[in-house]
Amino acid sequence: LWQDPVPAVSHDLVGEAEIASLKSQILASGLTVSQLVSTAWAAASSFRGSDKRGGANGGRIRLQPQVGWEVNDPDGDLRKVIRTL
Image (cartoon, rainbow, N blue to C red):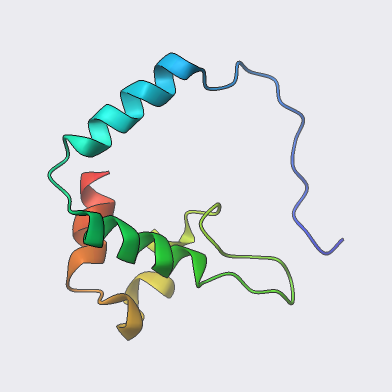
């Protein structure tokens, strides 16, 4: 298997009201667009095509080694965004 198995959905999916609430919370977080985009880029750039791991879906950007990579500015905005969100 080249990819982690994904279990069948056994719960309600996120609806429009939850999406609107999450958007409001992000906008009210005090984080800048630059901080959010930098974090999204750092997460997406961790994707590996060889085994289809990493990327923004896995949340691994908050863990070692990715959180400590110099390119992710580990002592700067990345930790602030992760802590805030």
